[in-house]
Image (cartoon, rainbow, N blue to C red):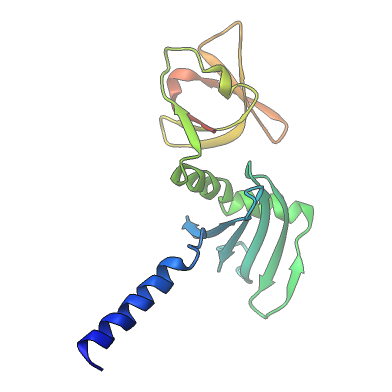
Amino acid sequence: MTGAKKSIVAGCCLAALLAAPASSQQMFDNWKITPATDGSSLEMVITNPVTPLNIEAEMDYQADNLGVPSKGTIKFKDGVTRAMTTEEVGFYWDFLKAPNAFWNYLQAQGKTTSFTSNSEQIPFGFLGRTVKVTSNENNIYIGTLAQNTNTPDWFSLTIKGNRILFWRKAVKEIQGIK
């Protein structure tokens, strides 16, 4: 092939590559995250998850745009695939740290906002919403935030129906979804 033909072929290949739609699929914390085309939900898949039984080859979840899973499927190493029970969805979602991967995905997409001051009031936009709280020890908690009106140095998160109090000076960051 002559140099001119090589240039034309290379140019055509580059044009085809640039014209192809970019995959919005991304990897976070061993999770492959793919948003729905309308942005209303996500598919989150983890391959070879580290579980108590270590017999699962893959777990596939459907979650809403707030990171709440609605259903899941397990593919076992022997090739059998089945739907997860509601209890399995919740257990493995938390056990495999899917919420952390979800928040890391949102942050990479520029879809989070954060608040770091422990002296100013928590912005109104964070109240009553799902947030990610990172403690000074780097522990992560995800739940619905409520401000304690009588004690402004404290706030609470409701996590799976349980209310947990936080002292603001023990919190490094509060992150919300834009």
